Length: 615
Image 1 (cartoon, rainbow, N blue to C red):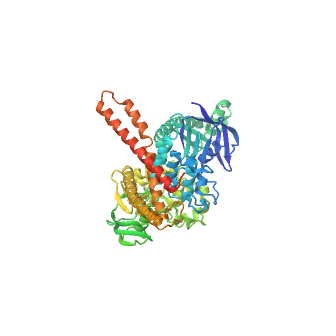
Image 2: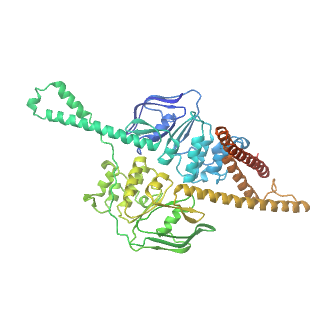
């Protein structure tokens, strides 16, 4: 395989932090690489160095001549006055990008709900992130570098992105390097892993699951070697300890060898450990919802939900962005009154809530970590041993030197870890977590999962991290169209329910479009008879235009889904048993039906494009 980008003896250091030390590694055509490591170990800096956005202190980064490299950074470089359309496709004419089904699919999936002519400055942080992701994916790159591409995406969009990246280049071409804490995404997309730690890059073959297995085996081998080294070290120390007078007669070469063993003692990596804290007693009744509805104006977010959560239940709540998951959590915790129905909470329930925005911790931004921890009990008994809050903080990866730090000066991952400790020190019996995995590295996520595995109370979890959801919850419920649906088969069933809801919505939209077309035709005839002319160039009202645009988008989505079908059926036909005449006939009939549907949809697409004035 040809090399696309090479790093030769690269070293880099930030003030007080060594990121890379004399690292040489290459990126080949066809590579799909996931980068993992603890927060602050230099994953994002590595991507910036590869992208030549940061000059390394030593060494060099070599790009093959003529390659194009795209970069999705943690923050965008858009001007607030820039339009969404210009941010995504630049000055490319609409008839050019709209004729490309790949770009149409990206735009429809990621930013179909945004105003194409709207200002970027008017968007939320999550919307700006989706615009930036659409910009990168719409480009034609030989190498794609992506830093946390799944941020602000729901599970459906994450699944779509994984599928897009798998199909983006033919096998053996292009290259992808991505930094993400979404372990399901790493397993789906990546074929190689790089672990960044202590200034080095350790490569692994396979996706995240294979990486974990290989790392455990490496650690086992290193433990065996370390045990042998420690045995040698003990013997040498015993030999050196026979007194200063005797030492003067000892061979100097052996003294030097013993001292070298001492000097070579490796530093202990900052460990992370979570232990189970005691929880308050929980009675038989926890939370009961009866015909609960919540509406914001005319928009109904929750619609007549009845649900009972019992002691020890471990529940995951699924839903697309904006489906109302956070609203449901607030109602269940009595932080928001429902518009209708009632919520009954058990008398012994003690909630601890970790929200996406960490509001509870944000109220203490001007305090130091040590001051916040001093507000809790002076000691907690865990497994028969007494621990102070500061000792528990150290077990969560905080160094003692970091405890005087103001909370507002902590990084995103540090704030998330501290928020988790802050929640646990309250000793709740109902734990409510809204996106707890944000900003946490994969090692920390594994520790959180270990803790939640042993959580003895009731757990309510909202997350787009599919790995975390499936690992720590026993039951999943989907919030779709304001209704709560049980998903015994988990996330896969949730996707099926969402697809079913979208198909139903498209059917309703199609029927509405037909009715709108009839109405528009009748209105046009009446205007013609009266000798009047519409104020609009196309003769459509705003309502009619919206209906036609919805149908146009639905046709585009269906065409995108059918795009690969003829090729798949041709391959299936070529590989089928030639003596199985009925099987061959079935495949030919299926291909004919697909070709007919594509032709019909293309005709409808052209008609709608003409009605809407899309060139």
